Length: 323
Image (cartoon, rainbow, N blue to C red; front, top):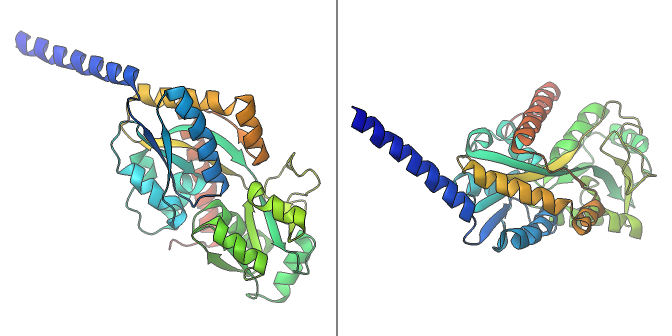
């Protein structure tokens, strides 16, 4: 019996040493950073900014892999089914981590069980925009217009469950208007139709919209957060515009396959936090409207749990059903 106990103890020690050695050597080959959205959006741009700095910090190439569709779920499923070794990373988004499991009736993965939060990279507001041709110059005027003709106007999104979808649904519910959802496979396609007037309303990232606003092709009516953005200090919040209680924030971060060794998770978190607070990177993120965060895995996990507790009861209350 004693010899058996000694053998088991030696086995456990060997496993611990092996794991520690593997983490110490990590990474020894290129990493893949999966983005669940099309190229060009803020999630993709953020991934490329962070991936570039992680490549330098880790000494291995970080390759961005866009797997767009289904509100980020296609990309998330790739990571959920990857090896738990820290070589396949997910650019985690609000929907994937917090509420897509409610919005989609069937998912091939569980964000809670299959994905491990690493760090929240940052948070950002969205802006409510309309084509310049639409006769609405404020949030109040848009609400009045929509109420006068229920079902006539539509809003575009980058897909069911994404921030561009749920922020609009929240607006629709709190403003008491009937507008039609038109989901796209990415923000780029949605923006094309918004500019042409095929859809009349969109909630999108500042970086994707600001150029069109400044050129006069789009009109910005409000920002989704309760607090105004430093990038657009003259743009009122949607709540200020008359939709009481409106407050929504989009965010992103890093996640890996559940079961990834904790020393590997810690290394990724530490290097990501360092990267996003480099002055050059912080400025590039700020230009996208993103406030860098760099939370610990525990802090990010707690934040995701709080977001689930906020959004899912709200969806049920306003009648959003799983699709």
